[in-house]
Length: 217
Image (cartoon, rainbow, N blue to C red):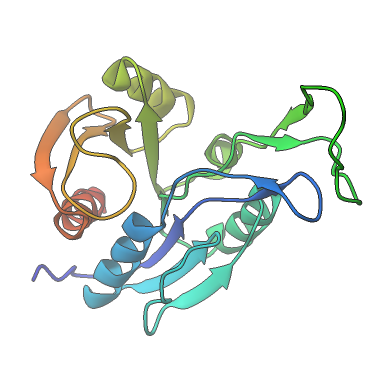
């Protein structure tokens, strides 16, 4: 196993966020958190200090990793900004909800006689974009899940958010991007290089990501 020459502090985010509609219901996505948890475990085995910030996931927290559970995108932002100051690298593997209901209904929304109920949505903060100005020498790794033009859209995100690396997933392909099983991904670096990885496990993918992050140190 590859061992880095110097121990670093790696901040990893994982899982979905949940955005409450009322006390009973919420908006979320299909993220299981597996990629982020695999990253945290792999980084720890390499000898790094690891902080894992996770949205709700049915996974066991990795051993010897500082574990910070959160629920909403706002919770995730607060935790990331708090621990980013002491991190050398942030791997933003969480699937943070882009929108949240506004306003939150404090009582359960009852069924109406009307056929449709309309929810007003408010944009959640873009956590990575908010960190770009204070990046310094830290390594930033982001994720991009697209249905169309995945490479082109991911390159735009990489530049806009001043990322060093972006991991690209495509929804609707041969391999479902969420959950266990083989995945097709691409890894794009800020120098423009694109590495396509076919039918690989998440356990293998995370080591490729960590190799590339460590090479930048």
